[in-house]
Length: 271
Image 1 (cartoon, rainbow, N blue to C red):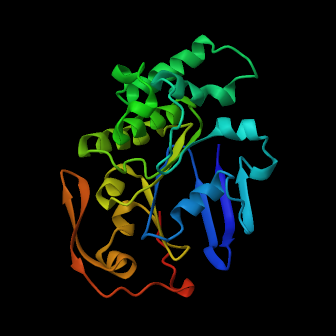
Image 2: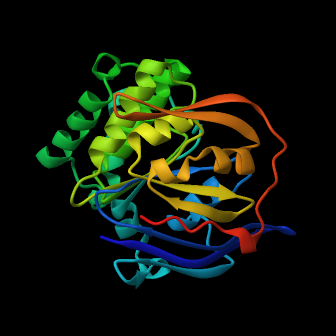
């Protein structure tokens, strides 16, 4: 499957949150959406999966307008992990993860062996087997985050969209989650993830899309998007870019006077 968006704009109230954004997602990619707070990352994510219809622009999934896809088919093609989702019902962890299979089931249809396999793969991948019988409302924030990631993984959709999935996790589980997201991308699947940790983004994403003020100001491999000049210009930080054991690291060193880009200053980064 291929997801394409062209000329996306989104207006909330009197504020224009996205400005003429183009985006393409191909199988095998792990795309990191990065940028300052308020840059439009979550809004773009929600537009791409149909939860926030754009004010202008076109989104196509496999060449077909996204709005023309039946909701169930779209749910089976696009798994979504929202930012800081809440759990209000005291369901067991196992049952919460099983909800990820709903797009593949007819009403009142029993879970089949294939569904059970997907659920178990998601539980094993997120290291929550020891929690399976506990109510999700009794878990810590970090444990609950892994359960909800497992629910998204259980969909086994061609596209997985995750909005700040490592927020609130300890470093070990942050790396585990990013390993999972990177490993979920293959010849038939792709992942889009919103991140604030630039080192994690550089290490685990194959491509980064840098947003500022609702515009794409850079789009390309981590090594060419995460430059000292881009970070100073967009984030207002002086940063040292280093490579250690083949991995790119971003080390902030201080604040600088940032100058936000204008639409005419969009950076075009080659793939």
